[in-house]
Image (cartoon, rainbow, N blue to C red; front, side, top):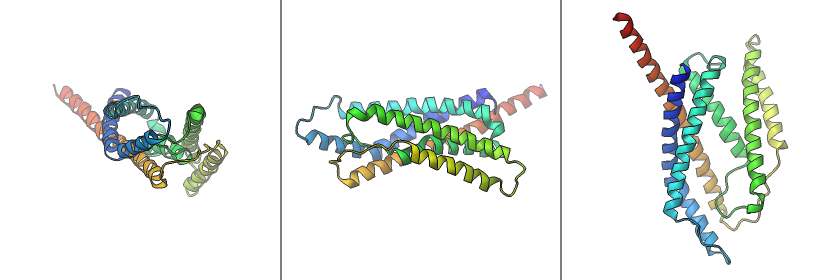
Length: 239
């Protein structure tokens, strides 16, 4: 898959994945957010909502679409650059492998360390600290994933121990980064425990749905674009 095809497939796949994520969030995440806002507004001295619920839903959908567009473009560009270095035999497997690595390093591992919180959990004073540590852990996680792939390629002669050594080496450094990163101290939570755990569960589910949709659409669109280009070349060669 060439750069142009990869970018087009990534763009379309990202937008479609953003749509899927927004629909998932409207159905499953929004009820938790609305309930958390209601409890926050019911507290003494609470300030009125700055935006209406419909405006918040519209902003969320637009945000997911823009996120999907940007991530899809970046994913397509990265795939075009590293496809020959990915330890997979076919274009399809390479696409799924890169999507899994991205999901793990950008999504799941940082989420396990710093799970999402609904409105009303955490004060504004530590927002900068939480955002900085979260972004920092994503950067470290991505670097570890890149190093893991490079380590796997380096162990090309260790046929029997290649996967165990790769997993062990990556696991040691990933665990070290996980435990050495600062902990987000959670202030007293007024929300029911099931609401906090439920919000985190659907947030993780939405993120998983996004990366799954991006992977499937990227692979299918990439194959379609490559097949169309090959068909055009065959037609031109017959003319």
